[in-house]
Each structure stands twice: as C-alpha cells, then as structure tokens.
Amino acid sequence: MKNQSITISSGNIYDPVMEEMMKKRDAELKELARKNAKHFAKRNLPSSRGDNLSNFTGEIKAGYEKLATDVNCHLQPSAHLPEAKMDAEYFKEKVLDLENEIKEKEAQNRNDEYELNDFDQSSIPSRIRWALIGTTIITIGEIMYNTKAFQVTGENLLFSLILSICISFAVFIFSHLTPLLYKGVETRSQRWLVVIGSLLLVTGLFIALAIFRSSYLAAHDVHINPTYFVVINIFFFIVSTLLSFFVLPSWSEIKQNAMRLKIYYAMKKRTKEIDLLKNEIDRIKLTILERTKLRLRIAHHANYAADRIRKMYWEALEIFKTTNLTFRSDNRTPDCFNETLSEPNIDGFNYTIVISND
Image (cartoon, rainbow, N blue to C red; front, side, top):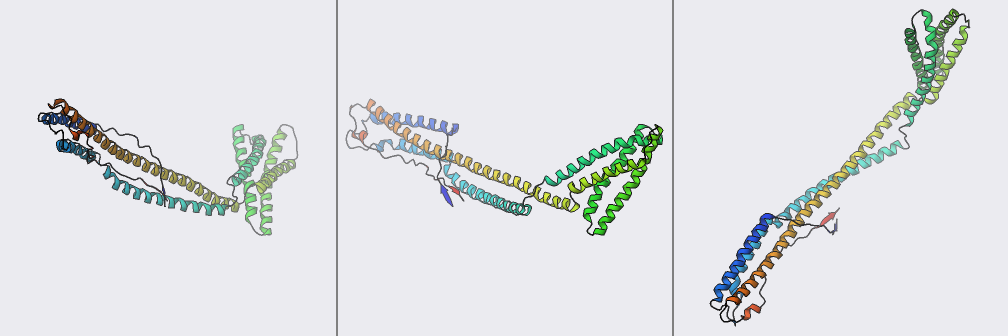
C-alpha cells in the first residue's frame, strides 16, 4: 500500500443559515459588550490598577464560544470522518473486485490470443467472396447464353429467362459443391468417383442445352454441331470448379474458421468489457475524489468559521475597551486593558486525508 499526498482544491461553501446565525449572534454579543462596558464605566470599573479584564468580559467570551459550538454542531465536520472511512472501505473492495475481474478477462484474452496465433478473420470470407464473384460472372454469361436457346420451346422471353436462371444457378451451385465433395473424401477412388460422376451429370445437362441451342439456330438458318456447345459449357464448368477448388475453402477450413471466429469475437467482447470495467474504476475514483473535496470543503469551512468567530471575539473586546474608556468619569485607562488575554476556547477541526494506492 502506498500513501500519496496530493493537493486538492477544496473550494468554498456558502451556508446562508450559518451566516445568518453568526451575523445575528455577533451583533448581539457586540451590543452586549457595549452595554456591559457602559455599565462598568459608571463605577469606573475595571479599576485603573490590579483588575483582571477577563472578570468583566467572561460573558462575551462564553457567548462566542457558544457560537463556535453551535456552528460546529451545524456543520458537523467530525461526522464525515466515519463516513469517509466507510466509503474508503466500500470503494476499495469494489475496485479490488473490478481489478480481479479485469485480470481474469485479460488472462482469458492472452490464452485465446495464443490459441489464435496469426489468425486472420478476413481470410476465409475473402476467399469465399472472390470464388463467388468469379463463378457469378461465368454464371451470368451462361444465363444470357441459354436464354435464347430456351425460346425454341415456344415460350416467351421471360419464361426462357427464368428457366435459364434456374438451370444456370443449379450449375453454379454444383460447381461449388463438387470441389467441397472432392476435398471431403479421403480415398483416391472416391475422388475419382466424384470427378467422373460430376462430369457425367453436367455433360448430360449440357448435351440437352446444346440441342436446344442448335435447334434455335437452325430455326434461323444457322447450323452448328451441338458438340461445340457441349465443349464450351464443360469448359466453363471446369473453370468454375477449378476456381472453387483453389480459392474456396474446404468444409473443415470453414468449420475451423467458424470456431476461431467465435474465439476472436469473444476476445473482442472481453476487450470492450475490460474497457468498461476500467471506466468504472475511473468513475469510482472520481466519486471518491468529489466526496473528498466536499468533506474538505466542510472541514475547511468549519476552520474558517472558527477563525472568524475568534476575530469577532477580539473585535468585541476592543469595543468593550473603547466604550468603557468613553464613558468612564476618571478618564483613566485600566492597566488590564493592556494585558494579553487567553485565547477563547474555540478549537479548529484537525483532519488528515490519506489517499491509498494499492
């Protein structure tokens, strides 16, 4: 534990109730000083020699001491010390809990960071995106290429377009599934089965499409062997499949990436929570500082009020002396007017503010 001394600007407090009380009582006591001074002056008291001034001003002194007691009771600076202690204990425990929670989350983040190593959360999504973009471009070309061919069925352009989109989209999906199936099998024979089966399936589809295209062109007196169309379609399919094979991640990569993404986002969430916890600690420290300032202001104001009451007391004594000299008939100055009087029993409020940094 380290105790740190700091300077805190305590500021001022204006208490109208206390100010009115002090003003009223001060006026009353000074009027009492004048009254008593005149009363004693009629008998030329205090005597010019040998008297003690405190015997004639005790009522005034007691009045200001009573005023100091009332002001202290009104402000109650000492009542804030146990409150400050309770606040310190509560906030210390609260901050300790928050710091332990921060340490726990930071330790979890370090473990997850070690597990992720050089994980790039954008790598797999980027590969999927580029594979989809490339094959989508090819698919759009297929859709435009097939639309005219389906008009040989006698339907309108819209129907042909919808039919072309459906078939081209199916080929698009199949061109991505084939590499995934190929990467998913382990034996060589299974891989050959996936490759041959895929080629046979799409070849049959492409032969049907080639016949439609040839029929459509023959209706416009253009005769082209359907084999050319089959070769072109298979070429585009192979390009899409190879693009997916080399760019598109496998199922295992996708699953592994999903698990790492989960850890990555958990780390991000914990990082935000750590920032919130640190902000909460700063807020608690600010609260402690503000409450400390308030207690300092009250203590400072209590001491300031005590100093003012002492000055009021000395002013009242001077009023007593001046008034007494004015109304004396012997025109003598009592020697006790020059004596040093004891301080009134008006104690200041002693306090110590200790800020602990654990």
